[in-house]
Length: 531
Figure 1 (cartoon, rainbow, N blue to C red):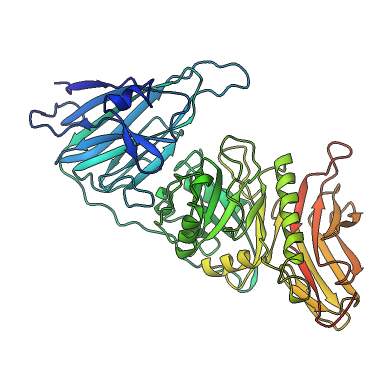
Figure 2 (cartoon, rainbow, N blue to C red):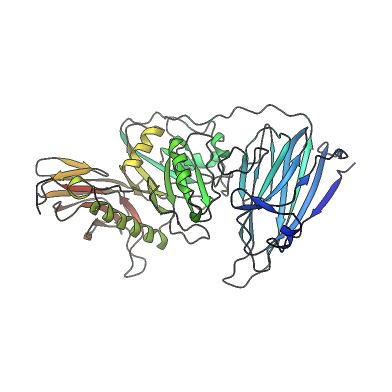
């Protein structure tokens, strides 16, 4: 016998007027609205049977208007005895004129514990990456969390990313499968330490996507690509889900440290939670105007992680960073192949360095609070290159704690591949030395020698040294791609120095793409001295 099916129609083209009057919508948490409940819990319900065993299916149809809220929740009343909660959905994608937004509808799931911001009800998110998913006690579709399907009101989260002028017609089909449940497997998470090489420079990529969000590579394929790229560590950073945290079993080793995190993908920008405790979910359902980001930045830090705004000037809808940098620990200035939005992120970061050295706490007392730069691939699928770029961190050990400490302190540089290595620092006349992210204190007029050693660069590369006064030295590297550049300055002349290695410009008059970039070395004038 085929399963009994019932269609529930909720044509909500007048969502903010007519549907409210009919009582089909109510205010909801997380800046959204809630549709009428789909009930499977009536006494007369009897599940049908079929090839998949006893199950019951219902379909909901509706239309979201242009200007719909960020999140629309479809409540589903789940009875006892359910072994699997399965969802499929479709929506119309009518053609639109150039420059007009079309339809894009994301989806996720919250269980009977509710949709409260930062609450415990989160069960998964796939955004627009797939059209169906399911959860059971012992398994779940990638992006979703396995666990019991307990009775109560669950919520399917519909998130209209963009809506065409004529609206977004959708159809959601919910299937509950009844039967015994299997025990939930205990999650196995990556260890916090790999063998490593003691205190050394370690290469990592902290922005990667697998099949657990909108990537096409499996975790195993990512681990293999990371090793092939010469990386020592990676960070699991799926969009708005932690489901991949338990997907790396057997993939780490003495040569590869795997950190767990999340790409918190809000409508006002994306931020990486790097190296958080496994299983810690960080909510994303807010905009800058809601003044909630600081709360979730603190949650990331409580979970042991770093807060890193990603591709802050990317041009994709919702990608441009609008929360400011006050709550950040570092900023991603290089995301994938070098593009104009990276150039803008670099300029903004450099301006922030200038502000830091000229703010209270700067000058003779050293720089004020400054944000280190990081670079990541944001690789999703072929031909995206894992490890292009990569952040090279000086850490005491190849461990979660030491790698994050190195990134937080700015003891790092960015490189386009593992073939390219840098050594950069400043030394005064007394032999005192400071490396990347460090501070050298000297008399304001004392000579300081800045030295950059490069190996593995392309034949077309040139070095540029940049200070708080702007670029002050540009010189080509030898055709071998290896060379040493030395430059003399004073703390009065340069409050910091950082190095860039760039390819030859593809367009005359414009900067060339990056091959490498260092965080700054700060030159602090000792108290009581004058320039």
